[in-house]
Image (tube, rainbow, N blue to C red):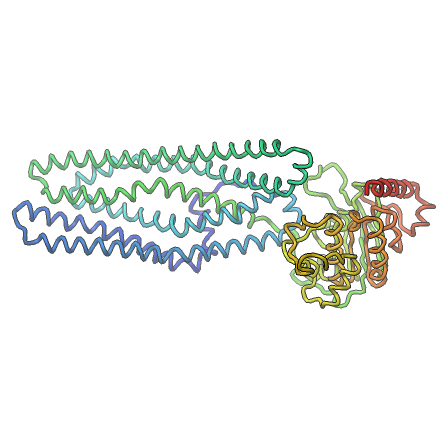
Length: 591
C-alpha cells in the first residue's frame, strides 16, 4: 500500500474525471464567493470618501454613502447564499459516483486482494474518505481558492492606499506563508496516520461484532474491549496531534496579521499626523485589512482540510490503482452449449505470501472429469483441495498449466460466462441480508418457482417454509440467525438452483446431522446424474456419492479411481479414509 508521496495538487487533480460534471457549478461557486469578497472589499473604498467628507464638515454625502454601503453588504450576503446553493449539490453526485466506482472495483478485484486488505480499511475508504472529499470539493476547494484570490486582491488594494503601509503589512505577513509550508509537511503525515488508524479501528469493531458469539463463549469480552481501547487511544493521541498542529497555526494566523495591522496602523497614524495621508485613507486601509482577516485566519483550517482531502484521495486511489490480474480476455471464446468436460492440465498455484523457496500448494495437478461424472476430491488437511476448487471459477489465477471446459481454457472466457457454467457451494456458507428466495436464486434470479422449489427439496431446506414470512423472510447479517446446517443447506440450494453444467462442492454437508446428510445425498444423486461434479469430501458417505475418487497429497493427484480400486492400491488413501471415519464417529457422538 505504500507509494511515493505526490504533491497535493497532483494528487487532488486526479479527482477531475469524477468531478468533471460538477466543475461548472463549482467554478460558478468560486466566482460567487470571490464576488462576495469583492463587494466586501469595495466598502472601504467608499468609507475613505465618506470619512474625508465628514472630516471636512460635509454631511450631504452621509445618507447616500450609508445606503450604498448597505447595498454592498446586501449584495455580499446574496452572493454568499448563491455560493452555497451552487456548491452543495455537485459534491454529493461526485461522492456517489466515486462510491459506486470503488464498490465496482472491489467486486472486480480478485480474492487475493481481499485476502491482503482488512475490511475496515476498505470500508473507511468507501465511506469516511469519500465523505471528506465531498465536503472538501463543496466547501474547502471553493473557499480556499476564493480566499487566496481575495488575499492577493486585498494586498494589492492596500498598496493603492499607501505604498509604505502596504509594504509594511505585506512584509509583516510573510511568516504566515513560511509557517504554512511547514504546516503542510507535518500535518499531511499526521492526517494520513489518523485515517489509517481509523480504518484499523473499523476492522477491530467489525471483527468484534462478527465474532461476538466466540468472545462471549470464551469470556473474552474484556480482552476485546482492551484491544479496542488500545487502538482507540492511539487514534485519540493522533487526533490530539492534529488538533495541536491546527491550534499552532491558528495562533500564528491570528497573531501575525494583528501584529502586521498594528505596525501598519502605527505608521499610518504618524503619516496622517504629518499630513502625508488623509484620515479617510487610514480608515479605509484598516477596514480593508479587517476584511482580509477572515481569509487569512481561515487558511489554517482550509490547509488542514485540503491535506486531509489529499490523504483521503491517496487512500481512494490506492484501491483504484490496484492492478486486477484476473481480467477478461480481449477476444473471449465462448462455450455456448457445454457438455461439462472439466480438465486440469499440470495446474500449479502458489499464494502470493508463500515463501519463494517452497513448492506451490497446487503442484502439478492433472485431472479430467467427463460429462456427468462426479469425482470426490479427498486428502488430509492442507493438501490443496479447497484451493483447487477455487481455481475453477478464477477466484485465484493459476500460475501455470490450464483449466479447461470442453477444451476451452477458462482464461479465454469472460468471467461472467465461466461462472454461469460452474456453480460452487462452500463449506463456510455465506448468506446475505436479503430474503431466503433472493439468497437461493442469487446465481439465477430468473429461475422459475419450480426451479426454486426443486433446489429447496434437493438441499432438504424445507425449514424455510416454517420461518415467520416463509421464503420471503429476511435473513439477518451473514445468516447468523440460522444454524450452521441451515446455512449450508441454503448455500447448497443456491448452487443447485443455478443449474450449472459443472457443480463444485467444497464439503457442503459438514454441518449437517447424519439423517439430514443422508437425505441430501440421496437427492443429490439425481442431480449428479446429469451434472459434472467435483466434490471435496470430508466424510466417507460423501465419497460414496461420487463415481470416482481423486486422492490429493502435497498439492498433487497421487491416486485416481473408484473407492474400491484406491482401497486396494493406495496405503495413503486407506489412511485418509480411516481418519475421516474416526472424525465422523466423533462428530456423531458430539451430536
